[in-house]
Amino acid sequence: MVVLAGARSGSGEVAEGQRGTGPSTAGDGGEDRKPQSDEAHSAFTPPLGVPLPPPPEDEHPTSEFAIPQGVAEPTEKREGSAFATPAGVQPPAYTPPSGIPRVSLAKEAPWQDRMRTMLRMPVGERPVPERAEKEGEPGPPVPRVLDLTLRIGELLLAGGEGAEDVEAAMFGVGHAYGLGRCEPNVTFTLLSVSYQPSVVDPPVTASRTVRRRGTDYTRLSAVFRLVHDITTQGLTLEEAYRRLAEIRRNRHPYPGWGLTAAAGLLAGAASMLVGGGALVFAAAAMGAVLGDRLAWLASGRGLPEFYQFVVAAMPPAAMGVAISASHAGVQASAVITGGLFALIPGRALVAGVQDGLTGFYITAAARLLEVGYLIVGIVCGVLMVLYGGVHIGGKTLNPEAALQHRERPLIQIIAAVLLCLSFAVLLQQERHTLLIAALNGGVAWVVYGALADTAHLDPVPATAIAAGLVGLFGQLLSRYQHSSALPYVTAAIGPLLPGSAVYFALLNFAQNNLDVGMASLTKAAALALAIAIGVNLGAEMARMFLRAPGTARRAAKRTRGF
Image 1 (cartoon, one colour):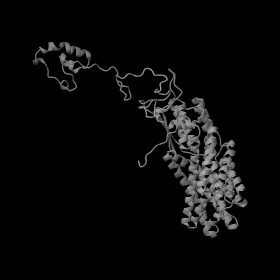
Image 2: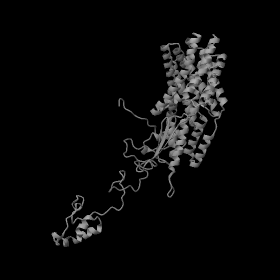
Image 3: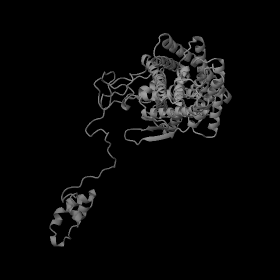
Image 4: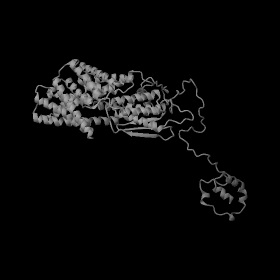
């Protein structure tokens, strides 16, 4: 009976009894032994006379990343060896043929460049955070850091910042507070960030939805300064939360009546830019003011942005039709064109194309779809008025009047500067950036006029070159001001927007000239894409030729046809 108990038991004591009592039980006789159970015949039960293996002390699962038994861990590192891994860099699983580059991210460089460089590195090559925890101190409060990261990213994305800059800001905040394995992800309406403490620990993920968007570049610049201070000066979480709350509580820098007056000034300056006079300036300004008030009323009633653009486009078109019916010698097309300049979503168009060029295709598609909806709203509002004007007033609106180009360099330069200045006010920029944005737009218009009028270059490449200078100057100013490039770029592209091409396309559609209308609409789309690509190319040239931190940026390399 002792033998059977030893076979069924898994303890070491019984196993020793089994080895000691084996011979004595063999002579007891088989007739006194009871039949063995099925457990005794199991394939996993050791046979009689074979000792049982010792039980494991602790039940710890073995990680697939653990060092195999028999392989000694390195106890010391060679200092000064050419093959040693640089300090602060995690070695990859294999050594690439070109060797392991040493990454040095100087804090003197803008945080945008440093964070873009790190985001485009493989995870194993990113430098570890400099805030190393001391022994006995707890690690970083991961939930609070992720929450702060998402709140900062939400303000940037809602303010119109590109997806790449939003990801760079979120990664910079997480890295500054000690979250080395931090991975942000940005789409058009959803922000998420994931942190994994180690390769064997489960990740912590948080997300936030962006439901409301607003144009306030003063708040955007304040958030950029906050990120700069977090990444360079090491603000505590309490200080960062306090400053973020102050940024959210700050009111807009300009009152509502000031924004309405800026919309009127923008429309009037745009009408003079395309050949209008004093009467056209007044009519375009009045139409834009009425449209802005109607848009505010629709917004207060909770109508979507599409309908706000529909009602905002109707007063400028009605003003142009009325001027054309009452004054035959007035260029009424300039009135409607000026009103369209204040409505064309140039900011969203540039951001959408920029996201597409930097690889954020989902966000780019969503932004461009938003631009398409807003333009359709403008088309609906203008066409409803133009159909009535064409059928009631006959052929008082002449599309050919648009082709009468008038060269007035001094007046057009002044109008371009005024347009950029009023556009900057509408974007709620800081007061010290208004003059810089206006001068940047004036220089862009001078370059465009020199190429298109003097050198007789095609308008599309002339627009792209002028927009490239805008992007280059805007990126340079943002680097030295440690702020976003949008306040220096968005308002400056105002004179280059294709307002006249959009208007003449709509007017030809209203007069049932579909072929001419499609040609004008295609030209407007080409000019819009030239502006967006030119701005992005100028910004990339600034990053390419100026000193960038660390190694060169790595772009996605793809083979042809695969």
